[in-house]
Image 1 (spheres, rainbow, N blue to C red):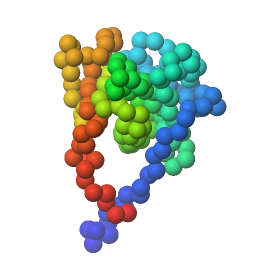
Image 2 (tube, helix red, strand yellow):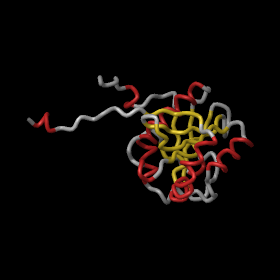
Image 3 (cartoon, rainbow, N blue to C red):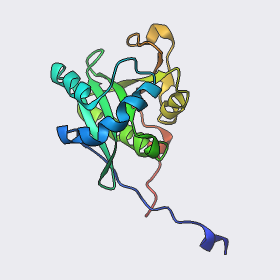
Image 4 (cartoon, rainbow, N blue to C red):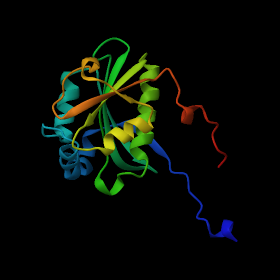
Length: 178
């Protein structure tokens, strides 16, 4: 009866969508605190994200939805620091949604969008004050870089990098039947 006692996992649907001004209502109550915990030295708010995207056409802002409800945000920059290169600047979920898989799934979905845009190499900052961030990126196939290989200096963060043309073992594994 051990099999009967096991809880069945339900498949959660995580999707990305464009971040829109109406999202400020659910973003602003938690985003600044989460960004500060990740080591961001500038104030992060929905308004600041849209201002950044308005001044830089390479910036993409995406909401993370789980089963149709918003649970996080991703910000990334295409073709920076060079052609075919991108940076995932922020993957954030409110504390109550953290470590439940939406951020990791969203990062994978963002990589798919990047591949479609001609990106082959992706950088991601890993804040020194948030050790779990390094583990997050390593689980996604990123590797830590030595300082001379960093795309730029970002106070309080080291950098991770991944060639997204190379699939990880998890990406190559066949999908399990539902």
